[in-house]
Image (tube, rainbow, N blue to C red; front, top):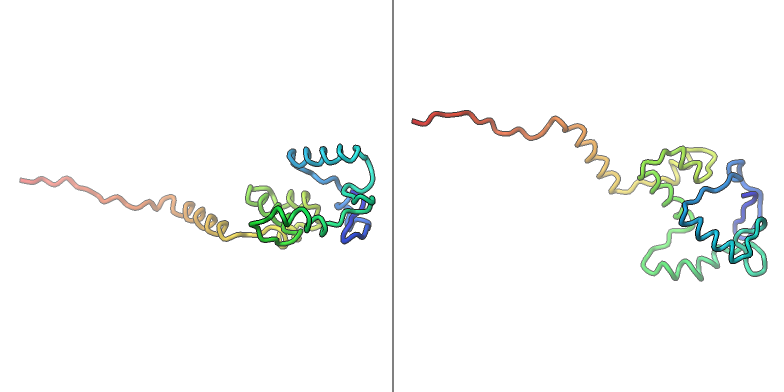
Length: 151
């Protein structure tokens, strides 16, 4: 990415890392390749342009496409997608520095403090794991039986 667009304003990217290629998973790549093919396979210019060739207004897209498809979901804003990605990658065991690179943050603390979220099920799972590790040798004692002669 050579530039950024926010609220219709085209600017230089904030950091050197922002200019790096954006890694995508195969299913998203297929969708983006199909979109690009529908647009005539451009190799430069705005990736998501309006019919007028200006940057697509994400809020218009939100209101016309995304919100109607989220009938039973509560919308938490555009950064929720990035927070969800960071949190899910973290829960899968991906290193925080790798998540930082994927999100293209200049500082890993931004990723850790603002994007990776803990949910209550994470806390419960962490405590159960700790209990398992601490109590590996604490299995309940079996009652000792002694042979008793009955006469």
